Length: 355
Ligand code: FES
Image 1 (cartoon, helix red, strand yellow):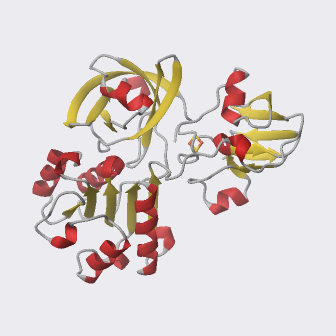
Image 2: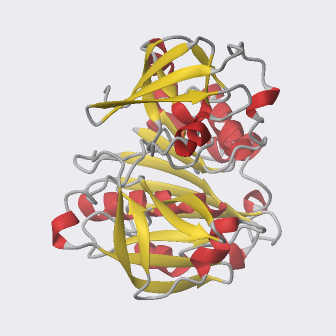
Image 3: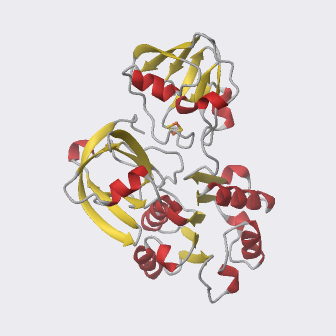
């Protein structure tokens, strides 16, 4: 995976998908084709000056591997600083785009039987996975359950209809709606533990048969679905989750209990073979302190979800405010998320070059 970097890309197409979402496609110059090669399930971070503020947002790639263009799905978020800006973008606009990142991936090759669970705009990486697997693995099968409020909020409807027609025997798709009555009562409501249990009992899904289960959506849906699948006996390493938004707002750095040295801490950063330092005081977030000192660190969500800011705590001590992306083995080896890191010693070294 290429190191996170921003590149200017030209928008080659903007296609309205639903009343509140668009698919934005980028032209990838030949020179950048290796850098922007991706594994289905990964995302792009878009960056723009919105009202004088440098804003970054991650959007999952929705196009399949091997497609001519690289596309993301963007859904309007009420009051969202970036989505309103993104929905007004047009062909020919140039946007700063980070090379593909993310670990919610389904590498293509071999023969797989996957269950995909998505809610709302959580369908974007799932679409790329479904399409890439069906097109790139002739013997693989996909079962997709997609939860929405109603038909109007279903993203990529036409694309999924096309997939169903093309891969009749290898692609099974079920819609679950909580604001629109379905012919089959089971498909009304939310995709929660009870729903998955019932679907399993009725043989609509067979949780123990899948090579992997990919879940993407809001935090409550992910937690309910993964807990239900574990109760049904699915090994934890077969359940892969991508969190779009945490259900609780990020705590303010100063409001969490950390033992910040009174004079603040000296943070040294190893990045691309160089070493730079800056001071960070109590109540500050590390990314803000770095930016104020003129140092640009790799980050995307700034919320502990994406791991773009993953680095190794090489010296000193500290704690993370929250973590939705690092695995236990990574934390054991000293990896931390810079966007969530609060130092607890006078001097800390964070190594972004460590792998
Ligand atoms: S920037 Fe996403 S986890 Fe830190």
